[in-house]
Length: 252
Length: 252
Image 1 (cartoon, each protein chain N blue to C red):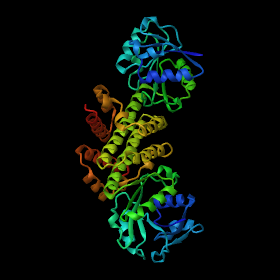
Image 2: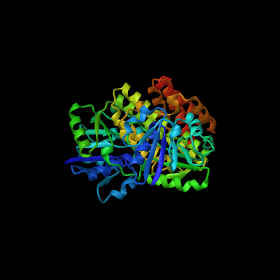
Image 3: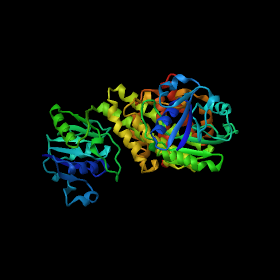
Image 4: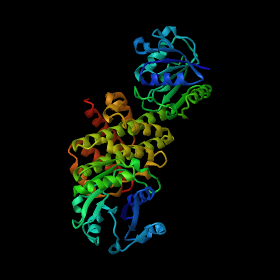
């Protein structure tokens, strides 16, 4: 049985907690947060704690705290030579206090408060400064059923940036689609199957090969008409820039 | 039994053909294309034809031809007062020759040559200049199991534009994600679950509420670091413009 101590009470911490509870081979020893209220609803299932000096022994300490807090919390840990990982996409593994064995357990996924996620759809990016800790991190990922990848800090920071493109920016394009269709009283539901299919396609085909549409065809007539239809300057700018980008990609 | 004549041999025509063949209540009378070769592999299942003057009688004629060819082909039809629809997102319904009853049967989806699509995931946008033809178009959509919407030409043209944002532009962001991760030898597979979850989320939550990330939080430190990581000028521009757009949307 793997024993885990969880630190933090945000989305990532809560999703990890729920996943560990479901796993057969993991036991959450203790859940720490500096503000106990946020985790008080779990007090009947797990030992909760707001005094970092009272942390008990576990196989791993998972710091699922905000990026800015990682270094500070790692310094406050009242022990040495244990395995301590953070869960951040952008924090350097060396920012963890070196008094402990350091690593990263970064879930590359978008977590929402009330949407349950199957961890088999949560790739885990693993890093361990001490090579001997890597098999353990892999084992922990496996108990969650997660795909896992060995990723160093530089790669992880690039992944975090990439995630902004394929998640936040993509979502903003959905938002713009919502805005534009709202103006003409078009039900956003009409667009949902297309949104899903676009994401589905690149599961098996590269985005390069999956591309279609007026920009790829360099269909100037349609592009001109679309730009005329757009009312907001910002939407026009985005249309122009992404059209240019597609043209470059496809040698137009 | 509804009888259909199909005109054109592109992706849309072929997907419609395959869906009609599967449907219990539709029979494809004839499949026309000016170049017979493209549909010759179907000659044992359906009457194929490259002479537009030899079209036989059907309940509906579906012009799944390129945008530029719609008007011309509709003029060449050797009959009058029959129901003729096109399948284009951008062509005005009035561009069809008025000698026939005119309408639109626009599938809002991305079709690939070798990817089979369940038509229950293909919303159909219906338009009929003669109100009396609408129930028939609805019935035809229902035989395919497709969600269907009454959409006028102005709305349809806006939808077509919107589809460019949520499909072509989104796919280009996937492409950029692929490019950026390739440079650091990161397997694009790591990003696929995030891509799917981002699309899944907006099936039930509005894109506005689904948004997360550094731009929404106005996390200047992360934004600065990301811009520094980006090597291509075009990627920087896209990052800056979409970050600005998210900030505007979320009042930052």
